Length: 310
Ligand code: R5P
Image (cartoon, rainbow, N blue to C red; front, side, top):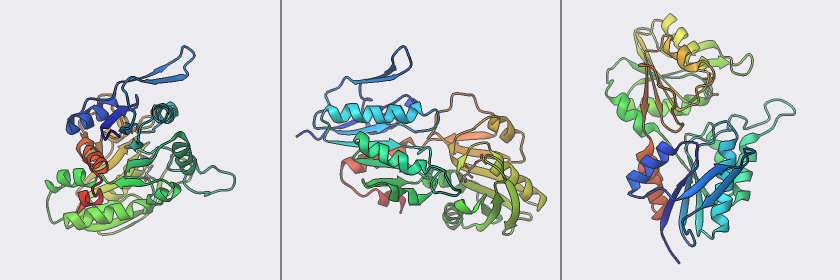
């Protein structure tokens, strides 16, 4: 039995996969993830993966082709007799539909979990899930890691006793609490309502904001509306400065332009999603490649992953 580690990438975020391979001192696995003329996805694995411990890196942001590429790659690697396959999903898309919040809606997070297992994934490694409970949708082992160490290293430089970490909605409170504790900062949250999908309204702000430097942290920035509306409310309440951090920069529609012209002074994101557009000065990208690479190394070596965060 071989115990080699092999790292493959789909097309969703090759630069991140390459950075992870560099960290691990590996070359990216040789695979063709292409298309037939009609657009259908066609995968062929060129390396011999018989008996190897294979990791497939692919965030599953829209279009759904990204998810499908991942499933088809897993299928190809499984049929090529890999010993174990781990789906490395830096951004787990379709996660926001995680419960029946209205009648007759889908639970896409569960559907995607089922699809991964059926395709042949033996385990999953992912980062900053929209809701940690999604882990329970999987009957295969899942390692859920956090981008927090990368953000905290950056935010640490801000220092200052007047910092307050703000959750832009109830869902981000746990994340904000962990940041506040680590930064020795105050904590607050925004009572946000969504009058319709992709719109956000600030109802109340809980916490001390006047004269403070507010750091807002969230898992996802999509249209940017949640962060922008929250920043407007913070400024109205007398915040001296507003900085924002979000792990997964989906950037839907005019998000980049709207964030650039907002009252937020700096927006810090990570590279879980690819960045093809050139970003304006306000937006800073931090890399999570080392964190993910280290987690892969530990999974392969059967070592603790949680000890990465203590
Ligand atoms: C929401 O529930 C998430 O944690 C984010 O707050 C949300 O996805 C951000 O969306 P947008 O940027 O479109 O306001």
